[in-house]
Image 1: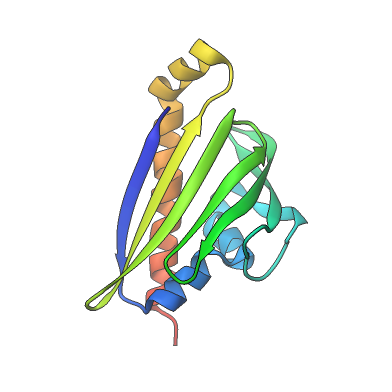
Image 2: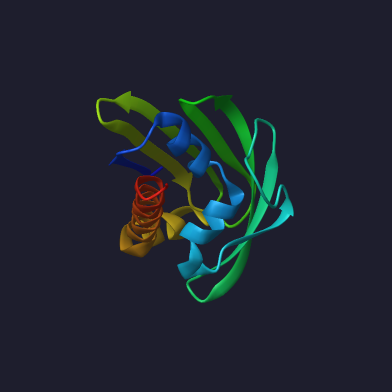
Length: 151
């Protein structure tokens, strides 16, 4: 099961980083490349524990839907969302925030299992893990840009 871990130092208060990361509207803004948008459940504002959101996006040229549920919310240090329906066999995404001098260390840990058994494992090796890592890094950098340029 691939595990993608990415750390990003953001020169902004922990509360700002935490709220930006769980903001549905900001999520849409930071995933514009894939035309991601919330189409079900919580479709705007801040996600809270037990909230469910269905995202629609275009990945690999195919429109897809994925439904995730927030299972853990420890403000302003951590929240976890897990897939309840979608293209993966399973995934969980832990968002951690650690106060540092001069800012906040944001840590994304994304663990997933591809569908289709051995074919899914091959897809991971050939392209999927690299694609997901790039997606997570791109979103983290966009969050950093927004947080560091807020008035």
